[in-house]
Image: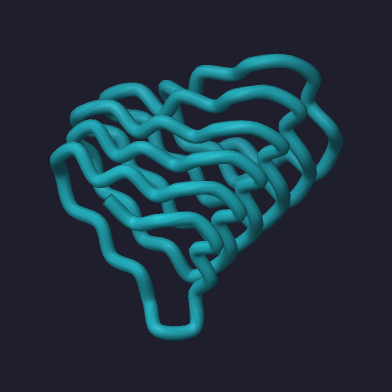
Length: 101
């Protein structure tokens, strides 16, 4: 599993296993087989494809869309949470500022 503590510019696709303590300044797509442990910040949107996994401990400044993966939210989503398909868990102490659909 890779660990990054720096700022990453632009949109990113996670197809492996990544622990992020830093910041991504663009959209993030977690592809099938990809796993993101987000302790830092994503300044835009996060999309989880079928077979992807996200454990959100940090902050997403935009929207989060689960298109068929696994999502556990224990941090903050400043935008909306879109549950298209897959498995989504929002723990009681998590904060979703927008709507949950």
